[in-house]
Every structure is written in C-alpha cells, then in structure tokens.
Length: 252
View 1: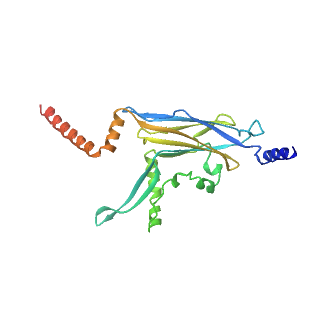
View 2: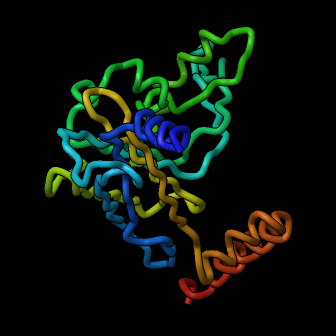
View 3: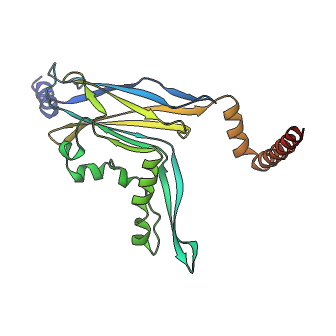
C-alpha cells in the first residue's frame, strides 16, 4: 500500500501543474475551386484549456499565438538573367526542393516580441526560411536566390506575414482569418498553431483542410496531367478552329 501511494505521489510530482493544451478548429474542411472562384477566407478558432488530467481548473496567461498555414509543396527553379553582349541570358539558377506553394504566418503581436530568433528559426516560422536550396558546389551563390523567390511569392499573394492576424476575444479564446487568393494552388493545406508563454512554446496543434478543383476545371487539370499529349493536341485544334471561325465571322 505504501508503494502504491508513493507511485501516485511521483506521478503527480512529475506532471506539470500548469500544463495547457490547444483546442482548434477550421471553419471549412474543404474549399472548392469552380469557374467563378474568386478566393476564399477561412476562419481558424482556438481556445487554451488545462491539459487533460491537470490539477488546475483554469489557465493563466498572458499567452501569444503564432499560426502558420502551409500549402502543397512544390519544386521550383529560380534563374538569374544577365546582359551578355546586349542579350539577356540565364547565367545562373538555383533548384529549390519542397517549397510551400502557399505560406502565411499570423500572430497576435510582432514575432520579435513573442519569442527569440532561435526559437523562430528552429520551428522554421519566418518566410525567408521556406525555400530550401539543393546542395551544390556553389551553395552560397544559390542561397542568394532564396530572398528573391520569397519576394516573388509575396508579390503574387502566396506568401504573407500578418502580425495582427490573430485576435484574442478573451484571455483564452482567439481566432484568425486566412485569405486564399483566386489562384490558390489545389492540394492539402496544414494550419499549425504554436502557443507561447514567456517566450517558450508550451503547446502545439495542427488542423488540415484541402483546396480542390471540381467540375470542368477538375477535368481539365486531370487531362493536362494524365494525358498531356492528347491535351496539347486538343488545345491546338481548338485554337486553330477558333481562329478559323473568327476569320469567317469577321469576313462577313
């Protein structure tokens, strides 16, 4: 009996009395892309609650939240053009493997005010850490392409940092809105939430949703990937027919 009581006491001793957990949800599990798709805004809800089995009934902050929303991974090639004897030519390039096609960072305060640079880098939160250059003999030169790739993705609306994107409605309940552009890449998306307290990550939670084409758009996408030769022939034939038809109509 004494051993049993001692074991129970040890369990409570090693269990964190102030452990917190995240309860999160996305407003939509699936976003459908049709011919009239002009973008979509999703809402991420979350609450901070005591860990299951914790001795306390309430949690105490202050808390900070950072949410990263990552789209399907893609391989990308960045090229640099230089003027060679009056002709602009591609003289260098960098291959980036597994780059997020969509990436947004939302927080309730400036990242620098939430935690330190090391913690942000270890969890690969900043935008400029998303591209990964393939190892080559000219690694340093290739890494110079990464900021430009991020800049281009930001200009297209695929990458974004919003340090006021998370709003706390109470000490423990928050929400954030994620805007998907009209040309959002189809595929699986992951919303990962980091809960911070005193600059340290104390809890994490992930929620997934998908973006997919439906109807005629889905048929075209599948045809382009599965039957590229036939798809190309049909496109050329349609272009020729449209040009001929336009010439007949306007000739009259």
